[in-house]
Image (cartoon, rainbow, N blue to C red; front, side, top):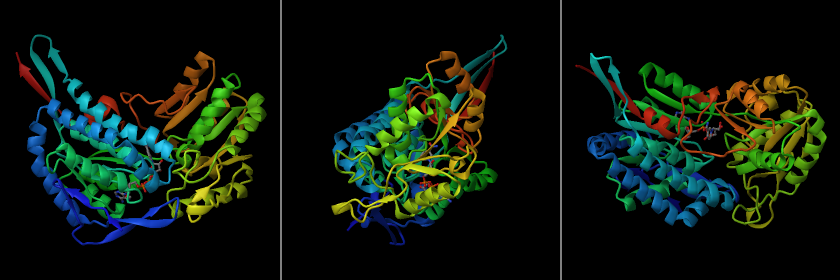
Length: 480
Ligand code: NAD
């Protein structure tokens, strides 16, 4: 069975304790590889390697660092099929999605930050005739990057690319649930000629490897994407150590449909926003609020489209809905469906586990599920489920739906469907969400600030925001 290795100081190495964790194939329900169950000793080696590599990496001209990231981007593109298949097998997501979204986005991240660093300028402030101030932005040293399982290579590269571009060396931990493409990336880093120690990838559990990264005194900056509960633990640990933190956490995103929307577009995109990656994207629109005059028509068209979705083998082209990432997560999602029933919800479609025949008989599948009849502030409507489960709720006024949208502790993203320009802006500005889409969903421009309000996180990533995060500003004042 394939044993994944850590990538430390440019080498693929076994964990010091020689312990391993089973890695499951969710669509089949069997163990298919082993990943290192690393601990603080492995993190220590990685931090040492990163610290040793830092002076030369930080001193390297930005253009040269950028070229290495572009080389990695090219290698990701050249291995698109191979990486997409590995991602689909490791996560259970449809191969088509991995091939068209996850892996292309990983190379875009590398390419974007490999070039952005060459356009990242310092500021200067002239103090009327008496002084000139200029701001130098220094890399921090060793950056810690911790990422989740839902978009493995996509989010892993979203962190390491700006950290490396800005001149930091990195100790990164992919999710133990989906470690495969980060491991394959370490092989590509070797091929790209990334200097040893610049990027180190330590596999293992969050409470061991993640915690060792968070508490390590030589890691002053941490970028974390994952659940809100984990984010809270990390924040509590890092705050007294005065670490710089970026936290990209959970969401429970409203999808607000006004009666004057472009109906076909709103229905089709709402289905995608609800169920892409089996609803396991932090940005999924899982609370759909529909203006009452359109409610019945929207419900009928929405449910019809959901019923036409094919749940099945992620490697088949006809599949729209793959497997849920783990048995534990499957049980969590099913428990929320039961909760919805006890809260008075009516299941319009789905609501149960699906048995896929043949090769995937042992896999973890759930039918895309649509529920109505729940209060806007029920637990089902306010807690993050992170699976293929959405609710439909009618509303009468703009004020009312803004209240519905804002009633959760989360504030990541929102979508608004309307043809009225003034209303689109008015509602967008009142919704508590770091990212608002009008008449679209998940249309991304990598230059824009990305992140959430309230319990969805602290800070913004993306574009120059990320390069600012991964650098320490220093003002130099020169008397004239
Ligand atoms: P998680 O919080 O369980 O794990 C995320 C990462 O943190 C993993 O690598 C895990 O091993 C590590 N970790 C766990 N405990 C840790 C600890 N004590 N110290 C340090 N690291 C620790 O999240 P998950 O289940 O992998 O991912 C799903 C969650 O991620 C959802 O809540 C989803 O909304 C969120 N998410 C947010 C965004 C965003 O951009 N806001 C994007 C994707 C996913």
